Length: 570
Ligand code: ATP
Ligand code: MG
Image 1 (cartoon, rainbow, N blue to C red):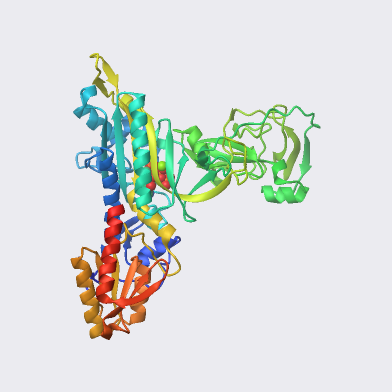
Image 2 (cartoon, helix red, strand yellow):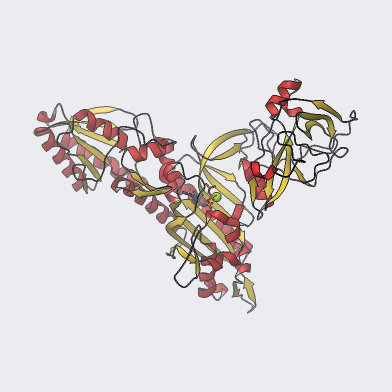
């Protein structure tokens, strides 16, 4: 098929959208692939829809190859199902909630474990019907707090969600392995550079879980990698092992005058000590109850880790209002000694360690504050953010950190959902067997943005062949024979089975057409220009910029052969 730019609903923009913060957001909007409809909601225009469809096709092919059966469930779901598993509360404000005319409560599905579990309860009776892998490619809804990065994080987005059902652990492990391998094939075909890392299970529940991360500066996840042993994990999942207790003798606690030192930076500078000698106490609300969290002053509290440890309790930062009527909580000068709220701490705040910390009085701190002597920790939680160079939990070498986009997530859920809905099948001995389950997601629309993030260059998008909206972008760089030669070449390529984008726009200068071709990012650009009278076209490789002039017929044959080879090796 030949897509003609003269008729195509695509208006390229010279300037970046004012609110665009990431490369993919900027370029997908400028090249006319997507258009913002409202906050976190995106319309896919013809070029974008083609890329999205290509991603979807690859995902579908690889899911079918592992025996997945495609289904399509509603997106509008009874809220009661999500209440039965506790996830309505866990997801909290992330859930879009609505009510029908009869007053029945619904949600827009953020992911579908509950309804798939019920479907299987209803449809599967015997161990002989298992294992089964069901999947769908469907619109999901999450009322994200900050839907800022274009289709990377939408409030409405496309997800492939798959669910496996088995009678035992071996079956679940096998389904998990099949998905892990299928995902690696999918992301390879999508042209993505990716890492498989250990993850925390979050609101999903269950045990083993890994994420597929695409390294990119725009990513909102941080992962740690060990160059020595190849350990890789989301930083939220990196476990820290506490050092042995420190038995040193410390001088008695001493209060110090430290005016205008509400931050660790100001305090360390004032006293001339390293930040690591100080204790940082962050106040949060856990299910509404004010709680202090202690970490060494040179570290941040990883709110993701904290939320994970305290789930299903909701964790929020305190606001200015939380201090009213609480003279005991002195903002910027909080210390754990004599504090009237629950105290959680990182294992680095080990018994016997001494710290400089707030004196719970304005402008004052205390030194030689010893854990176990001057204060106690109500509960130890591994909550300090991992830093570059921290020891690898597996081999002890220094970890390196990187930013990445989460493109997929696989879970061995076990029986969390089948217990909630009591899903049993009849076993070989006639006794009921509780079914065990896995769940496996891919951010299909997010993958489009992740590919754009990893492949774009200073000229624009630069699609890997299998996902590109066309195989060849033919440019008529002028009128008369140039237009005719471009049309003839497009026709030949089309007849050979190639997907062609033809820039046949009248009254658009060759310069603008070239700029647009580079912005749109089809892998091969064929230009009918200067030597069109001789029947010669210029073929450019979008990625390398390599150019070659050759007769149009030869170019058509060569491009057809190139695409055929690619199709055969895909
Ligand atoms: P994140 O941490 O980025 O919010 P998540 O861990 O909550 O994602 P999952 O519940 O694991 O997401 O969903 C499966 C996949 O769906 C994710 O791996 C991601 O690729 C995709 N996804 C999740 N939220 C969004 C979103 N708001 N927009 C686009 N894709 C998303
Ligand atoms: Mg996830």
